[in-house]
Image (cartoon, rainbow, N blue to C red):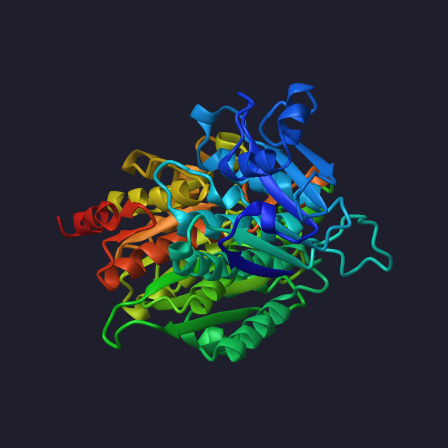
Length: 520
């Protein structure tokens, strides 16, 4: 779909559909009021008759509104005016796009992007409109021989800005929103692919193709090279499968040559059977999503490179399958990690931390400014936080606060969980330096504690996305989270790098203060 930015009056739009808003108080937005005036109160009459009450997310399409040049006017409910904030704005955009796909309109102009949202400016409004639109229009039907989806994607969507002077900021927001949407689509595509297609080698080839497209460096390591590097814990998980492991390393140099890179690490288990500690068969098909950490960091990397952020970024993906076989890890086995620390395996279904621990040690060679790992790591995180927030752990409070702030900015929320020393007791082993699981109590916390033992050399954060990376049920599919959070974090860091202290109505010094905490 084509996007466009425009400044102009709604009654002058010769287009298939014009989209405007209505609050629950029956108050019309500025654009809706202009249409109402030129149509001699046509819209007001419709509202008075009770056909549109303004409830958030409700829509009503009006045809042949008098004295307008458009074929349709779509009214979108905005809820209570005093409660209209970022969350409600996104819901209004999403509802308008859903309603638009149920019409034959191939072009539309949305005036919802002219609304006032507290603490946010035009750039943010356009960015979020583009992200939400692309997310709403996303479909994964490549394996269907006949599409069952009757929804129609419009050919062109124009996002309106209040003044001509807003066009430049609007274009910036649109470019960023499209980049984030593209990164989310990549993450969702990779997550939704079945395990017989999205193998470790397939994931590596997709990373290589992305590197060629954006002219960045990609290093792909096969098992022999991985072994030579010393990632023995990672390979211990991979040896149970006939599919060969791959280590993917992408390197983008957008900052100064001597600037330390931000490193993203993503768990890439392309299918998780549980290994010898076999999972229950019910719902096991969803274990193709166990590589959503990898999909997330690849999507965030793509967005950052497309946006040409002025920073250095490294993305590391250890990817393999976790399968039961004669060569697979067994409960009771003891392995040696790249760091030299030993691990007693009590449960082979706690395999993600065994590949991540080596990747986190490997990350040291890049002399990182900080490292963030993303993983569908524990069912315990789903029990703790459900499907609303990602779990967040860090060995530096400033980094956790910075990530939380980024998530709030874009509606991709996380929650800071404890990483206290008392939880480390659960990982004690009589035979090795640690066990690979601390049992059911505090399972997400003890998994993070395990990873923390391999991150002493740098500032680090861990995101457990087991509850947010995909949905089950009738809306089953990958969500693309937390790509928006990570990209916003990277954008904040890039703004600081170039001295941009005020952007999008939000003082950059708020983020700068968090970063400066690291020096304390």
